[in-house]
Length: 462
Ligand code: ADP
Ligand code: ASP
Ligand code: MG
Image (cartoon, rainbow, N blue to C red; front, side, top):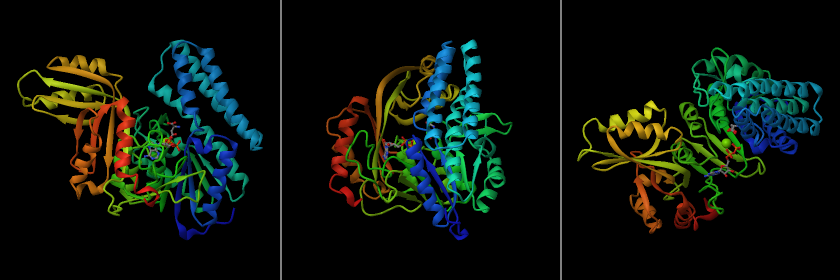
């Protein structure tokens, strides 16, 4: 690697699971990082677990809860073997193999006790889930170190300080000081710092995680703490696309979008960005770019405070599949004073958040992403209202800053959906989205009709 030149500032580069899925992919990441260092940036690399590893770790937890200690231990051995194979392919030295072995031994010990108790706490689950990022980050750090120029591996648990909401931890103020202590000096020395995403720890040092897909959020938290000049999210697509490519195969990259648009798209299901990612970036006004690891030359998407303009009616459409709709009807004729408060208190009590809300004279409809506590919620609501639950529903959301400027676009969105039955329709105060709730089975039709209507002609020009 070429020596760094200080003037360019700090660049945070986050690589997702598919970007570090194996030895070849890691080598590609190393090339991309070397290029950035060569350009004179001081680089913090944030890395996800190798693809599929977090799922495998959580599956091992489930086996242990069923009392299948052997199965759980076997699952960890498979994870270990996968990491060892990468280390071997990269020709990395024995120390690293030892670290991987030790990490897996710790996880096995947790799972052994889980399988005896046949119960796992959220805290135990976070300890297991964190192993993926702890291992991938060590491997990548060793690989980058081998290229010369100096690297520092940072244990995420020493720098991302969170509260103790295991599984959905939120960073606390002392993260700033920890980053200044543990990461900044390495960058100032011209070294590349490497840290696992998704993982943090409480003030007392207990391992936490930020929730699925949380490495993007880690990158933004570190970016804000370091006053980075840019936060880059490197993934397996060409940027934020006009629609989920798994549903609309001809979706096109969106070149520029605003923080507000990106937040709404992420919130309504654009998985390429964790919904909390934008917040720290907004606070420090740091541009976020989404880039493709396999095609580093492609322009990707740039997300900034400024609306992109360009006269496009919509920026992109997103969908959140398999949500549950809860309809609560007041047993009185009208929504009585205090009714909404009582309804939301029930959701609060069961720590369940609602996404889309619509009301009528006598009823309120809500969507839930996480319906694990639905039975208790239903029971509590039934004390003062009639409740109906519909599973297998989906949210489709059309997003764009320009929706505020031209009200006819909202009409066009509904018209494009034709006769598909809509369960809920909403346009929030931001007037940046038009959102409908429909049957999950209708998602492919709804998304492709909207995409044809608003994006087909625009094509690559976007
Ligand atoms: P990573 O492992 O890099 O974090 P993710 O799987 O979390 O990657 O996110 C990237 C995936 O998000 C893409 O492969 C794509 O299938 C999905 N996706 C959903 N909606 C969008 C969208 N609007 N634009 C881009 N990708 C999207
Ligand atoms: N490895 C974690 C997950 O699979 C976090 C991430 O990839 O962002 O959810
Ligand atoms: Mg992701």
